Image (cartoon, rainbow, N blue to C red; front, side):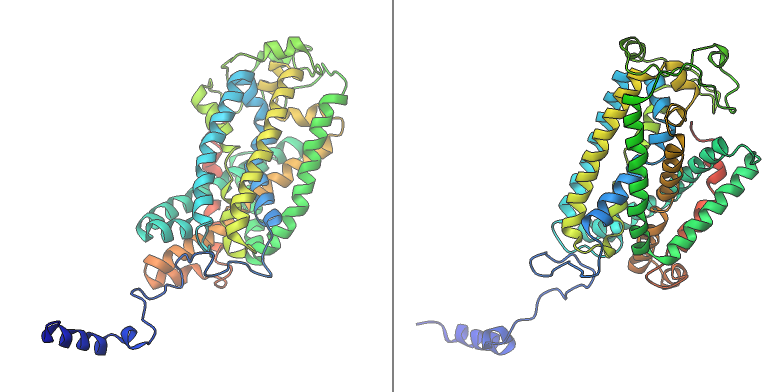
Length: 417
């Protein structure tokens, strides 16, 4: 027989513990409304949300391509050569792949709400890590917007010669573009995603025209240097800037590296600088994850859409790099960064693609990162700072991001080639 004192203890525990009396026990931790809940316990689907294609795949493709596709791909190949360019591309995508796998692991293990990268990191590693990474991520994308706006202004100056061009005039043009970004932010992420689909179609038509041009365009040895290039002797040599169609001789000349002066900065380039430019054209994978709150099923759309976009853009990059190296002389690549437009049978198609992708790349960093800022302030900062972000309302807290981009437009004109 048991000790009577033990029986009394058991009886007192039964009185104090409702679960022993047949009632439902209270969980040890109160459910957090912002915590990641296992997908099986709480569905993350939204009937009126964005699908994987329009919410993740399209924004990621546009952000990965960015202005590097049309305005700096020739620069990279002309400086680094075909072999080194392909190696750098593989390294860049390998780095990006590690990030994609991390995003996929976090997004598939729980319900992902608004706040993008900050939300997923903070709910997995805690608000300290999430806050630190979220703030860096926020300001990095503010500068990213400035970079894409500078690309838009460069294309504008190249194609509209009537416009005056100087440091402060370019700043004014970039500020006007950012004001349009501000309007898009006020409208909201869903409206922008719908418009992105149309822009994506326009960009794909431009890319398709470039690929078809490699097969059908005639040889052209009378391409002139852009007006902004005043420093290279090759511009004065007849036939130096040429499109040769597919040629083994041209391919052989473009295989190895040839570090030379960049006509936009006047400095001799190096592997580190060229890789930094190319790597910027491989990022953008967070464009879909950062509007996680507007996705129909974020736990499915983010991993599948981001991986599909990366594979798609990698294949396009490889084809463009190989065909460019086989058809365009090195002198053309290092002296005319808008070579895709100049060798194209229908140049307006490329012009449309440049303007579309430059503008649409400037908008994605501004649209979701107000949400990142808002979530961070709401979680671990003072309520007053949280209210500062609510310039319009809780669903459109992106205005502070857009205005912040204006201050970096001029400085980015001198950061890199």
